[in-house]
Amino acid sequence: MFVPSDRPNDELLHAVVRILQQASEIIQQEYLNFCQGEKFHVQTKHDDSPVTQADLKANQFIETALQELTPTLPLLSEENEHHERHNWSRCWLLDPLDGTKEFLHQRPEFTINLSQIEQGKTLFSAIAIPAQKLIYIGYIQQKPYKYDVAQQRWFQYQPQSDLLEPIHVGLSHRSHKPQYQQFIDILQQHHAIETSQAGSAYKFCMMLEGKIDLYPRFHPTSEWDTSAGQGLLESIGGGLVSLAGEPFIYNQRSSLLNHGFIAFSQPAYQEIALNALRLMTK
Image (cartoon, rainbow, N blue to C red; front, side):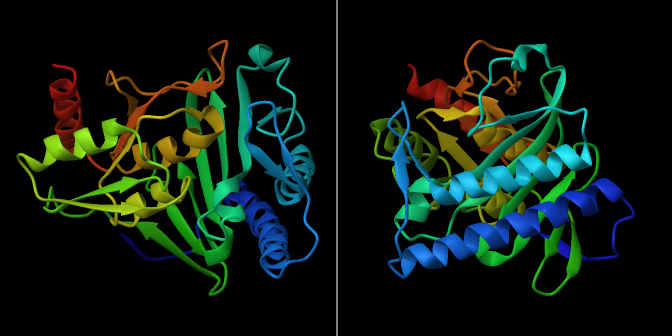
């Protein structure tokens, strides 16, 4: 949960909040135009995923703003070319509109994901929810902040109580693979379980708010989908690990695709999830 806080004394936090606030306004206006039936351009990328004019406008704005903020730090974005990325020991990692399918289905559960990585690890993370005018942000070794744009108020994370039941499991709207039901069935043998569906990295924010405890993913994502969420979860004592239990690393592999993962809000939930995975493979 988050409690009211003084304004943090950190210029990078405030600079990134300003950038994400303006990018959120761009996306939200595009969303309103789309929902009102105005002409709207959607393309299909080589992997059959959609990209819209909202993705591209937000990307262009954030890219320009980050170049002004940190001129020597390159940007690895979903909407840019990645040919030189292996030469970068440190960079920004960006998904300017995570949840494009949610956007197109008129579900306001899309986010902006931005992180700063070095030698494979996420150091700084931010997730903005344009429709809610909220920004979650922070460093890996500090409790994260939430900034409410509408109220212009700051909040900081406060640890919650120990493991409670029911365990809330967050699923994507498209979690139709049989592994998801098998995972839930195994959990229910020993725990009371409640499930909820939500889109994109919005689920990471729900985890920060204590609304989701576990988030299993058995279909692929990309590095820009998970880095910011992983960093924020790690800063509260949780995390995101592969199905083998290893934390994800970034910009270190030939492919930017991730395999499945388990995200958890505290270590007790990680152990419960990994035990369920072991039983699934027997």
